[in-house]
Length: 292
Image 1 (cartoon, rainbow, N blue to C red):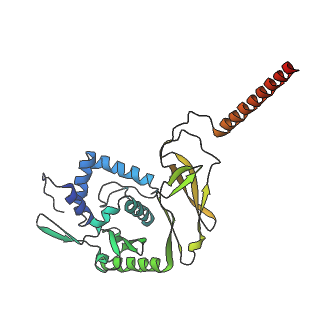
Image 2 (image 1 turned 90 degrees about the horizontal axis):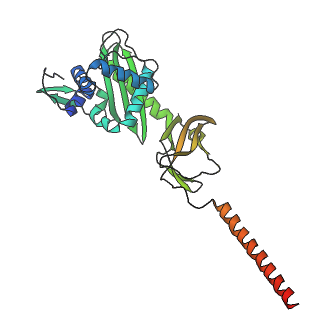
Image 3 (image 1 turned 90 degrees about the vertical axis):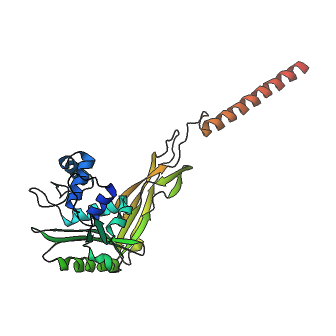
């Protein structure tokens, strides 16, 4: 990105420098700003990676240049990319920008698939001498998103065609079913609930019907209930095998009633009626005795 030492840089420019120009200097400046030092930031990177299930990655710096003990895999990059897009979809506007100018120096986005009008809107290129040329590419067509990872190409001209082959294969042979929509509403024991998250399942074309949603509902719920409290769950299944569990959250809070539960109320009313009938019967009997 060609940041000058001691220069004040807008955070927005730093993000563009990272996403578009692959600026290592922008990575370090951002890491130091967020965590005080690159070392502390890297420790948070590794902590985050573990929480995302990236079991085969270890980071030693913020930018990815060669470092002893640093490694990752294509699968881990795919996991990271999926979560990144899910949590920060607005970032794709940066990754799909084809060029960036800073300090009078214009740099183009090295992801050449962005220029092919095939739905690609990200994500990131990479290269180091030891392991070759890499590309994480993502595209969206007809509401379905694909993510592909190509690593270890010996020539820069190979990575884009290989990524495009994978994207075309994915769109041709697979469908993505929206099994659960985040915020989708329903009722549990007359309490409004909403799904905690969205679940999409990708299956081979023609097998969309194999995806099912099985509710797991309690027989009743008891107030008080807090907004956001997990009251039930649904199981997302593919060909009868459970692949995801989603909580159903209370859409609003419900205070505990000052009245007893309705069976107790009904029983109390019936009891009062019986007492009244008995008292009436005794009073009638006493009147009859007097007249007799």
